[in-house]
Image (cartoon, rainbow, N blue to C red; front, top):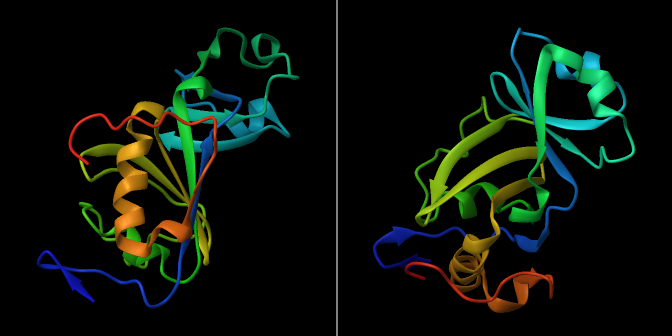
Length: 170
């Protein structure tokens, strides 16, 4: 299907589920330490060379784990996680985006920072069939509107806890 001069891949199937990201903590380590070694069993995602996002780490004593090696701050309240699932997720990312999601190096475990439809996002490849897209909660309605236009309203599910007003152009 061609729409507005852009190639849109919709025939391979994809669904989007958007919800608040939950308990996310940004962790900056200053000296080259590995967050996985310091934080043990905490689920984490490396989003920059010296920054990690820790998920559901609220029950751990971060101050004791990190000590003087870095700093951390909760950021989850301002983030939305959109899970794109199905064989068409890579094509959907490239609609109104500035990113080649079909690059072979963008594999499971990879994280990319880019822009989709004027919205700054972090994309984390979760599996061959899915990825998680993180954005500021205030921009989630703009991404939801874009994805609903491309893959259909019934294929984009929104948590009732998300903002509904679009900021910027939709």
